[in-house]
Length: 248
Image (tube, rainbow, N blue to C red; front, side, top):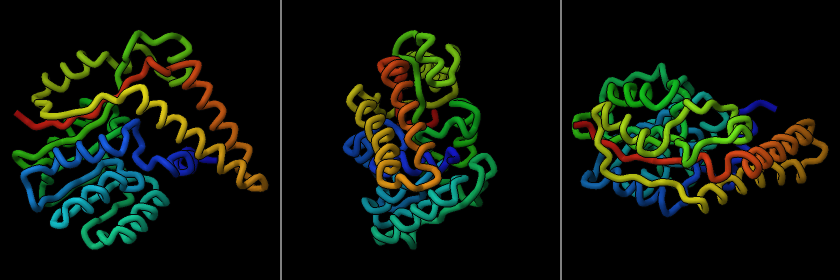
């Protein structure tokens, strides 16, 4: 079972692919689109388009573009957009986010939980800068260390101690790069637990419901492994911050 398929199944009941509750997503989107009745939003690594379709449903005069490498996730995004009646205001591109170019800049750029596509936070900020209109806003989500990671945490994440900094260090990088946080959200332990239980539970339940599927055993093994890595590894160690940023 490939990684994209695992992710699609795991996010069946938590389409926001990050440890954020629906209320926090709504608040961040409201703040990100505030002051503009009409505008253009771009999500780099949009997956199933959960951020964009919610933004469009709340803002009837906004338009959006989503970019992702997972064709099936984009199909789901189209289906969701159609169900919500916003399909005419969204364009979806099966493309590496690093290769996306636009003739016109965007009023809002999003990259929440997908900074790995650009090689980290700073390259993501650089890419967003080229796509953002003057006075526009960037919504970016990134991991950080809540405490010094143990060997179990690093092994579970396949990470290294220097891959992330703490919250102060991460925020300092953003500021030094010429961005100002105007709002944000630090995911709580409840956010994380809800997300991880949804991720592992959705994947395991799919395996239970499809015992004869060729990928059932692989799905169950992936769910069990992820649960162990979380509970016995990085729980309470890996944090997640979503910044709403503007350029100086």
